Every structure is written in C-alpha cells, then in structure tokens.
Amino acid sequence: MSRSLVALILIAGLSFGGVFDAFAQSSKHHRKSKKPKSQPCRTGCKSDTSAPQVAADTPEDEAAQKELADLARALHNATPGGYDRLSAFAVKNTTNIWGSRAALALGYEDFSKNRAARGLGWLIKAQNDTLLREYALYWTAQAQRALGRGAEAYKVLQTIQHDYPNTAMREQLLEAFAPTAVQLGHAQEAIDALDAYSATASKPTLLYERAHAYQAAHQLPRAAKDYQTVFYKFPLADEAKPAGSALSQLMHALGKEYVYPGVELQEQRAQAFYDAHKWKEARAEFEKLLSMLKDPANPARQRAQLRVAESRVQLKGSPSLIAAVKPPDLEVDAERLYALSQAYRSEKKEAEMFLALNTLAQNYPVSKWTEEGLMAAGNYHWVEL
Image: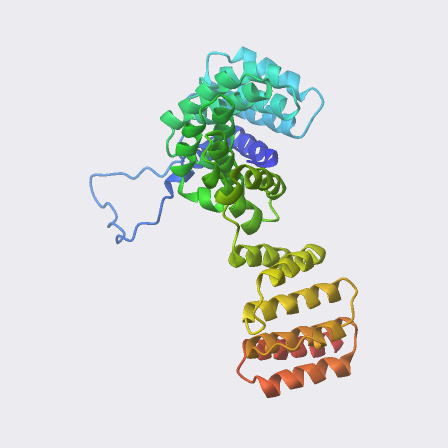
C-alpha cells in the first residue's frame, strides 16, 4: 500500500469517523440486494434516519473527535507544530479511542519519516482501538521489520492473519509476511500463505516472494517456474530484473533439470515491452523470439519480424523497414500495411500514407486492420481541418 494512500485513509478516518469503518469492511464486497423494496412502515413504528455514530456518543466525544480531525489535518498538511500538538492530544487522551487514533497517525508519520523507533511506541498504543487495530498491528510489524526485529514482526503478522482472515490489506500483509517468514527459516509457511491467496498468480511481487520462498525451501524447479512468470509475463515490474538474476543462478544449480521457457513466454515478454513503447527492449526481445521460431511460414515468426521492423522505425528508422517485410500470412500482412501507413503519417508523407491505406482496403476489405486504417484516415482529415 502506497504511503500517500495510507496517509489519505488515516486522515479521512480520523477526520470523518465512519469512513474508516467502511474501509475496514471493504473486503466483504457488499452487493446491492436484488430483493424488492420493503413497504414503508405505516403504523406503530418510526424509522431512524440519523447518521451512524462511530464513537462520538457524548458531547465530550464529539468535541474530541472534532479536535482530532483538526490536528490530524494539520499533521497531514505539515503545519508547523502539528506533530507536537497531536502528541499532546494523544497523551491527554491515553485512556480513550481518540488517543489511540492520534497515536496511529503519529506512528505512521514517524514510520514514513524513517523514525521507526519512535513510531513503534505510538503504534503499540494505537492497538487499543478495536476498529483500527488491524492497521495498527500492520504498521507495528513494519516498524519492527525496519528496526531489524524480525521475530517480533513475524508474531504480529501471524496475529493479523489469525484475527483478520478477510483483511482488505491481504496483499500488503503477504508482502510483509512472506519475506519475514523466509528470513526466520519458515519458508514453507510463507509458501502456504501465498498459495492460499488466489490472486498471488497475478501479482508479480507475491510471485517473486513465493519463488524466493521456494528457493529457500530448496524446491528449485518451482522457484524457477515462478521466477520465469515474473520475468516473462511482468517484464515491466520492479521484480523482473532480480527475477532474471535469480533464474541465472537456478539454471546453474539445476543443470539439465532446468526447464527453459517456451515461445509463448518469450512472446509475452516481447509484446509487453512493445505495448509499453519500450522500443529498444521490444526489438531485442522479438529478435530473441525470431531465434526460437525457425519456420518461415509460422505467423508468429512473421509477426515478430514485423515487430522488429516497427521497433526500428520508432527508433528513428525509415518506414522502408516495414515495407521490406513480406509476410505470407494475410492477417500479418494486413497489420503490416496499417503499420506502414502510420509510419508514413508520422513522417507527414500523406501520399504514401493513403497509398498504403488504399492497398490495405483493396487487399483485405474485411480485416480489422482495414477498419483501424479507415478510422485513422478519418482522424487524420479531422485533425487537418
């Protein structure tokens, strides 16, 4: 969870009371009922339409909540003296929830400013608030990790898993729990926790942590598979580069048992760079793909040749590089003509652009690339008006 998001949640919760309650229950995924609306109460009853009260049941609570909201906002806005005033409020209200919520804001502020030791004291005090205990425990563990107190953090993270199995912070919790468990020699527990979360397979950070846990547990083939998934399917993720380094080590360790990635994974990696307009990387990865595809009649090879040419054009090459590609596959050739028209458009060569589009429309009238080309032509005319 990003620091800005957490800060926003903290300020919103401290300032507006019930907002935190909604966030805390967000993992329940409430859906609108499909049942018909009930008939209005006509006799012998009275509906309560007042706003729900979290804790401000007395005038004193209302005053404390308002003061806390103002102080929390001042802290968030870095108002001079804001930290000291909120600290004084927390000390004054040590025995109630308003003091605990002030402590949570102070603890997070200290942690985010690399003052983990001081922040830890506040975060422990914040655990007295039942509503926000889940978050206080999480940041307590993070502060302990920052201080090198991994064993303590591990126990706190286990407590969150046990007490809040449906936490909305499941992903963030696992990102902290898995490396902590591995560091303490509990790699299998990390693996089990990550396997129990259905979204792990689509999260590069969690996949990387599971691969690391497999590696620590000496389950090298499984580690290699997860590292490959990160490296090839999520090449733009921060974890892709260290995953690649880990794969080099595993190739050496596994020897003949290492299962090399197939064409599909290499194509996914190349296409991800292409879609992100990382032209240098895309060219290199599609050239690797070409070395894996030997059959000239394979449409995947022909498309890879086109992608290499397109990448080279984007890197200041001539559109003639695309024109020189002659794919036998009709759909690839249609895409080539569309790409060629857009390359000419970028160079403001109007005649060549429309020649490519006309050829596309004549040769492949029902191709999706013809539709794309007609839309591009219309857009060109609109811009030129």
